[in-house]
Length: 154
Length: 154
DNA sequence: ATTGAATTGAAAATATACTAACAAACTGGT
DNA sequence: ACCAGTTTGTTAGTATATTTTCAATTCAAT
Image (cartoon, rainbow over all chains, first blue to last red; front, side, top):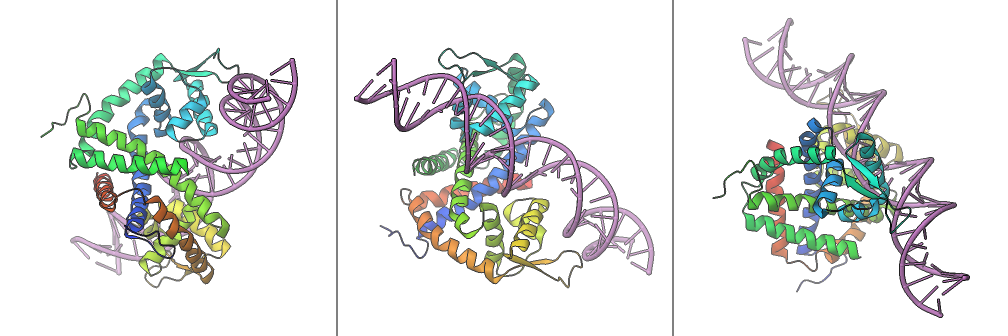
């Protein structure tokens, strides 16, 4: 049982720190790839994430709800949603439960964009995952989820 | 042996895609934590990374070298380094091997900032890593490194 | 030596994302 | 019904990061 040393890294603390640096790098690479993937359809990684969050839930969401699902601030999501509404990918819908917090829906155009992107994302994701064992990917996913949960609680 | 399906996710492709989303979330949380950690010393996550890259190598680096190590563009690193030079955390040093590409050194002030931050980062990292088995952290690290390598090659 | 390719610095435009602050709307307890 | 606390919309300011473009420098091959 490793102690929580205040003056140096425990072995786990060192591994965690190395993991951080790799998360930063991977994040940058994934955003760049996502931008390339979505650009032909007039979207970006960030806007794709908004469509994905709504589509995954299969029902309209408020701006703060989207933010919480993606781990982003509501202010940032609001900016993205406003731009996407201007471009016709999403639209606002009155919310009977809350006068201010309108619901965000995907338009037909947004659905078409999302579908087209998925057609490119499928083979890309399958290619990326190819050299790695599925069980390893799932375990890495579990580790990251645990860390996210811990950090969200703090 | 899973095929590389072009029309849907393979099980590995699906796991990879889930992993992506978690990387995005974790990246955001880590940057926020890093900002809090470094703020008392007049730094940010991004600037801390610059100091870390130079300190880790134990020798002055050029701006593009720092960028390559961190997975950032040289233009972005240049902006950070210029600001940090103004603030006295780093300084430029003539490079005999290249008239334009000056070397970036950590100043005494930068070194003090880095040391002070480490003193806070140690217990924080140890605390974050506590609930996770060291072997799991290392395996997750390996998976992420593999993915980064694949994506860097593309 | 010379030339073509790659690297670097510099500047600008754009996108992403956070914090802070304030008012409007909602929620729950009394 | 009322009040305090929370959530949401909005705006503003700042930091991070990429792409693009052009000129200066370096490198490598001939």
